Amino acid sequence: MFKDDGFRRARIATLTAFLINGFSVGTFVSRIPDFKTGLSISDGILGASLFCASVGVLAALAPVSKAAAKFGSGPVVRNSAFTLALATPLVSLLFNLSWFWLSLFIYGFLSSAHDLSMNAQAAALENKAGKRVMSTFHALWSVGCLTGGAIGGIAAAAGISLRVHMFSVGILIFLVGLAIRSSFLPGADDRHEVGEKKRKKIPRKFYVLGLLGLCGALGEGAASDWGGILARDTYHASPFLISLPYVLYSITMVTGRFSGDFIANKFGAIKLLTFSGLIAGGGILAGLLINNIYGVLLAWVLLGLGVSTVIPMMISTTGTIANEKYAGEISAAQGVAVVTGIAYFGFVLGPPLLGQLSDLITLRWAMLIPAGLAILLSVSVKKVLTS
Image (cartoon, rainbow, N blue to C red; front, side, top):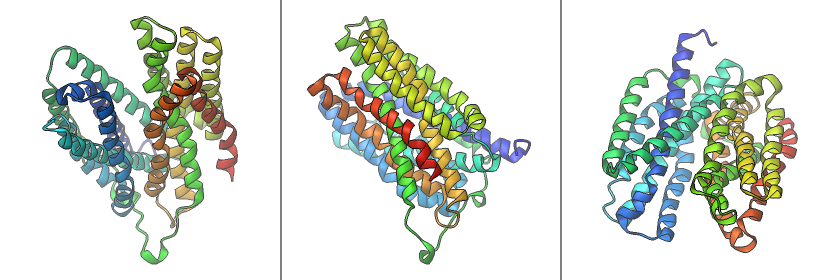
């Protein structure tokens, strides 16, 4: 399959889609402080406002999965790149707080539409390849996110206005989307329209896979939001050391995703996920027991390595199960929507949950939650995937 030019073009286009989606997200995150400054709002109002983007993400899952099933993921990911290009600068206008909420919802919805359809396209490519290739796609997303965040930080430090930056990124995404628009798989390759009389309930297995994905997603959210705070408030680290947990986590995250497909193909997804959960959960526990800044750094290194393959492998497994076990009942795109919809709650609910727990038992011990969920993933995945 890899010798087929159509496959190669579609693979490159999908890798590029993951890259620009991550770049958009990294750009958005890097300028969050400027949203607060531009609107003169408090941390509490900013946090509540950002939840509008999460609502948009979740709202997109059902309609986009139906569109991908009806028309094929190729046409949807192709067109959603252009709507993502429009949504990215939209949040920079900052006319007033109500507009900000609306623009965040739109951005979340359209970013999720692009995210879901590109994952469905990746699942279709993996089905054609006959082996695991999903983790590499997600590695490109991480690279895009890091690059967008780094450039955003430089732009903010250089005094480049929020609007100029975000509109420039929007134009870049539009041009890239234009360049790759004809390279995706034809819609017929993974179209899966089921008539009303044949429509069945989503199999329970997909909900369980989503819960396993949530175990990894909550760890990802914890690593992104709480590493620096744990280093600063609990261990009184220097500004340089405060920045290191997320940097090291990001490096091992990308490394794990680039190597994930090779390991999954060699040893199988079950073994990979079993050890991934143990590495992530065990890493956090080891860091808690060491109880100093170097323990935090060790924990975040192993957490990144452990959770790096969880979401990619869950999406990959979902596509395989939908195509092989439930063909004619549910499309890969619909299965991916269910699994990602549940898993992404880990990103939405995890950080505030840990924040509330940290007020009660300290942040150090609140980290037992992602550690325990990672170990739960490790001990459960074999039974779930073989049942």
